[in-house]
Length: 156
Image (cartoon, rainbow, N blue to C red; front, side, top):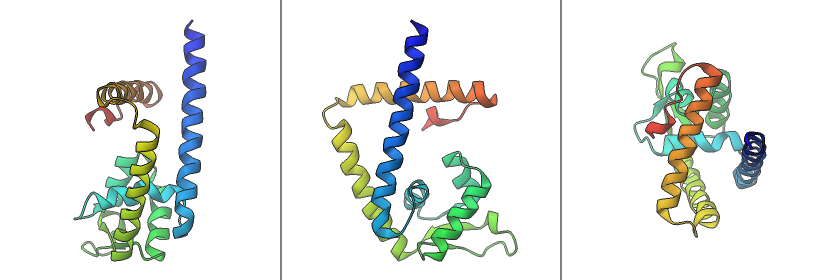
């Protein structure tokens, strides 16, 4: 019985991740961006005052090397600018969206809304609340097993 639950969970989560990755990759093509840029643009779009690289890393559970690559790519494409409050300390400076970055992020948010409405529009809100609460608990428990500390997602 437990093995069946594990197999169902493992296959389902893997399929969900693959589908999300494919959707993000396809939706970023018109903007010349990658799927790895989506979360960072959305996070910056929700924080008008900007976020530091450390804050982006923590929010997305992404290592500093990937954050650095994504920031470089988004900056080169003109979607993100780095405030220069701390000279010589790039990781402490806040990152904000440019006008082009805000426009792209608005488009991305529209696409995300459409996708979410498509995949969960027929599910009652109360069921979605239970699903996400349960998903966050499972995520925290798995993170604790893997790294010995909670992820903090259940606080979201």
